Image (tube, rainbow, N blue to C red):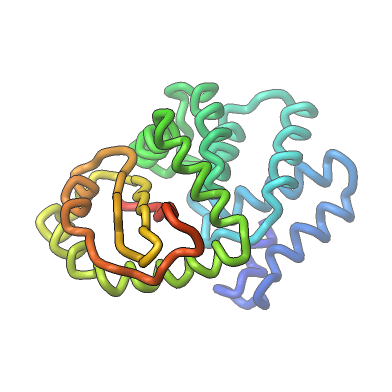
Length: 232
């Protein structure tokens, strides 16, 4: 919990939460140290106390949860928190497995409301076609050029589609239809070739016909980019 007060939003320096997680985990050591790493991650990222998405090691978070379950058994509260972290890390394969284990036993400490829980649960339960697109976009993002291209295309997309998003959002008020992933395929010259969304929501159904135009050419032909849209 002390990591909350090391965050730059309060009075800590940039990178303080990450440094704290590493130091406290090493100080405790062993499996208990890994558990502490998991606890810091979920405190900062999920539930009522969440204030940021820290740049923590996803591998260590997973090891921390495994150690926690081994030492203390299964806790539905911790399982929900782990699923929340998996969603934030875009590890939808693991998230889907965790949602299956959770069933309808959602927990407020991780999701705040049942509406958010159900939205993320549907987001994770994608069909084969969407899982293939997620794998392709994850591969693209794993390279330096892919990461740079994503930053560039994100800026362009926000600038060029701002008014389309506002046109769709305004009549919906506070009910935008929940979270969804938007997948864009670009031609070699940067022209938008194809667009898909999962799951289908009122907002995604509105925005898809409106999105068009040319963008910075991608690193390779037939290039897919994913934008995760987290909406109320």
